[in-house]
Length: 206
Image (cartoon, rainbow, N blue to C red; front, side, top):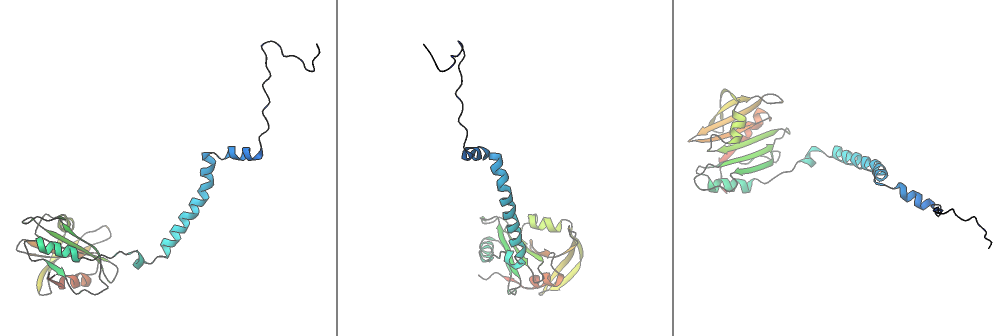
């Protein structure tokens, strides 16, 4: 019997040859997770650059979020055991950036603290606090290191003027205490801007 090939030795078998891979298969094999991550890095860098460019083009005014303090003022006035004074009639260049009452759901008879934050005409910060809790955090935070410098008559009331050391330099604090209620106006704003807030205080009228 004749054959055209050489028979394999016993126990030996020839493995079939793999067909050559097409260029498409080679490209697919290269698209593993590492290569995909590296290919996305330039796109990510471009997105970050665009985001930074947009942020730089925004003016300070566009980044300011103003709030309406009416609800916080009402909550404080309805639950406090004292007459709540609130800044009244400030110009549009005093922009309210924060307002809150502590506790957020007051119970009759417990201390109530109202805080309002402003961005003043000179783009500085001014904070207003009124509370019948001498240990309220916003009072302790500002007055803990305050050094009294004297008194000032503002809006028909006698305020204590203090200097408060801060990370960016000394700040001014104006305080008024009567019948266990403390009013505080403080911040990085200039003295005349703080006095404008202090001088605008009126009993909450709804």
